[in-house]
Amino acid sequence: MMTSSKPMRNFELEVYFSKWEFTAKHHMTASDLESMSLSTLLGMASEEDREAFENLWLGYTQTWGSDALRVEIAKTYNTMDATDILCLAGAGEGIYAVSKCILSPEDHAIVPTPNYQSAETIPLSVCDVTGVPMVEDASKPGGWYLDIEAIKAAIRPNTKLVSLNFPHNPTGHLIAEQEMNELIELCRDKGIYILSDEVYRGVELDLNDQSPQIADVYEKGISLNVMSKAYGLPGLRIGWIATKDKAMLEKVERYKHFLSICNSAPSETLSIIALKNRQSILTRNRDLMTENVVLLEALFDDFPGLIQWQRPLGGCVAFPQYTGPGNVETFCQSLIDDSGVLLLPSSIYGSDLTDVPLDRFRIGFGRDVIFKDGLMAMRKHFETHFSEFSR
Image: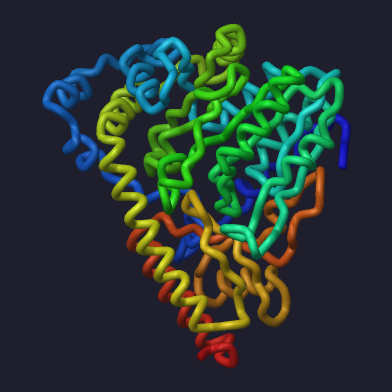
């Protein structure tokens, strides 16, 4: 389905969160991993890095990001150098700036749905966009897949950008390396950019399923990442793009002059410390996710027929199907009203491009105590409201 450029609509997820995120007793739809205190992060630092933070000069920073930060980010790729990295104020600035820099009103973009809304809404404010729905298939690992043939069919002579998001928000699906290679060859033949949102890379439930980062394997690939999700450090507001396309990178840097201009100096220094300790942080977060997924599966297993669940492949969110009485909207509303449990009904993932399943909800399992307390509240709610489903 296609549509023309249009004014940006409200960011429905953020509108919903502005009402509930900090007032709900149990935030069970968080999309980030467990965070940490400043003292904990500084406890990971070398003496040199700790002194650098304590003696930090609080002036403007380089628009590109500090040299030291870009060096550490480049180490998270196989083929990137520090000069291939542009630091940004979170991933949202990256989605916005890349879309505005790559696309013009005469162009066309392709976006899978459902998706993080800005990946759709920003391109739509510039040009025509085609939505390609993620396909539900219980026989596939994780219960979903991206139809590469549908993307191929959607390509037009003026297609300029394909947007990806794997591990996928909200389904937790991963694109297989073979599928990625097929998509790259398709885009290379047509000269199409691929913007790949890789914010959950490193927290796949099985690292053997991990896909390559697009900037490492495609000359017109743009990898987007951030400290917020897999690293669990959203308060730092540090994101970046990586690409071998120097002209595109410079164009985005120039556009950044009208946005954040530069990043927070303390945040850059703290991000360097986190990146130097990335293996221990990511291992901790994967272990926590695995533990929480098992607990979540136990809850759903104890109430058969209420929720249809398949374990996601990566990231800390999933998109289960509600199969109980009523509909998913009343289910989520009852949870927040009666038990203080916040979930995201799939209507929040509504798209201007395609239909999205209306019987699903997003649940997050990347937090520690908050998740476990929320799970206990969900169990009590199920026992009270859905006792007929209990084993």
